[in-house]
Image 1 (cartoon, protein in one colour):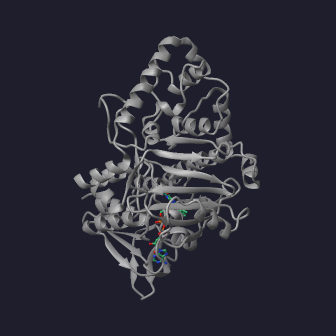
Image 2 (image 1 turned 120 degrees about the horizontal axis):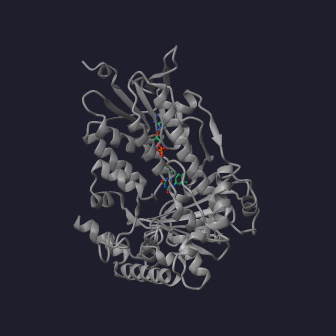
Image 3 (image 1 turned 30 degrees about the horizontal axis):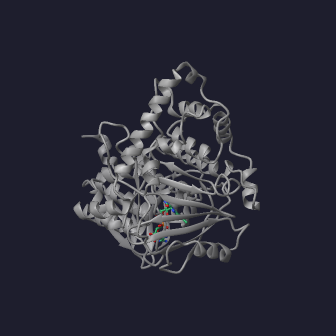
Length: 504
Ligand code: FAD
């Protein structure tokens, strides 16, 4: 008999039914609910969910595919649209705009990174703006989308994309999915958490009607409350407000637009920034700001004045602190979602971090012996991932020339984390970038933001000078033409979404 088999987890209890809880329930329902392990989710209708979180990055496709979710069914259920990137307005300087596209720019030539070649040729007047070399940016500029266009063998025929969707509908969709797989849902408010007297491990949670739910492994998906990891186990919170001072948001839905853009918009504002996210049935809007520089009333007024369509519900105010837990996994509790930390949604990374937590835990799934090595590895991996995302978000504030408000002056001149300062120095010199560990954002992402916010590097990789300039210029021109033609062939995004949902 397999000695380890007896040690397999018997009860996994997920505390919380927001996006994090239901994503975890769907994934573990599919891969753990196997006759040995039971998955139970507890959520409180009275407490509800945070209810925002509408924009994603391309990794979400992998999550849905892992669950075997049909794309058209998913888009229908969630009012979803396609997303090719994020348009940033007024970030480098007031009046600027750029698109941070999901697809990388161009293609390397003779082993040299595209962006060094373009950088050199642009100085000689022989290359166009960056965005003309990205299929995502070219399609976004035309308001168009298709899964593919042009010659399918070409690297410029398929845009890299993600989704905008209604987070509440997504959670509901995943709930149906998870319940079909046998995940048990319990509705009720947890009032008490029981711990083993010696080890401090959580043994059970007790609901307000005195029901008791026992488990071996507890996933804390309780949102900002961090009921198990924070309140019960007392794991500390590393506060990053000195780098990311925005601590409030006001969100409001408005009517859908006739022509939904295939991208998220992020407008810089005097004390923060504002998002606009097009869904099929409505537009999501929100204003993230720092309350040291703006009152909630001012923030709400700014949001309502700049809506593109009529508001359909009263504004909702939320408060948060940027940062993360010192540890994500403590004893037999793993925090996933807002309970593990918060980074403002400037690059739509929270749902991705939920997904990362779920998959890394899957890869390190403990048994009832709870080996320290699994926990420590998980904590190290997650810490590095989150810290890398943090640096990339701070970059948007650091790479600004704005000096028109106290907020922007503070952020433009703040001291940066060493890890970010190093990356910036390397890039600003010769446009170089290196990705460490499992970092989420790659060269093209850093190029998009730095160049988009006017931080053109002083030089380029000298190896570029070894290549024939005329041949490079001809190759770039060919890429630009193919990208432009392929983007122009795509249908309008709204038409494509409608037809795709109807056909699927
Ligand atoms: P919640 O949604 O808060 O869910 C917590 C759950 O725990 C609820 O079901 C609640 O009922 C339950 N619970 C809590 N206490 C108890 C108790 N005592 N008993 C029983 N149940 C309990 N992410 C993105 O990826 N893209 C975005 O565009 C984006 N925009 C955002 C904008 C804002 C302003 C904010 C604040 C966040 C945004 N996010 C975004 C983050 C995203 O909203 C969250 O990551 C996501 O919704 C996950 O939330 P959650 O499930 O961790 O928490």
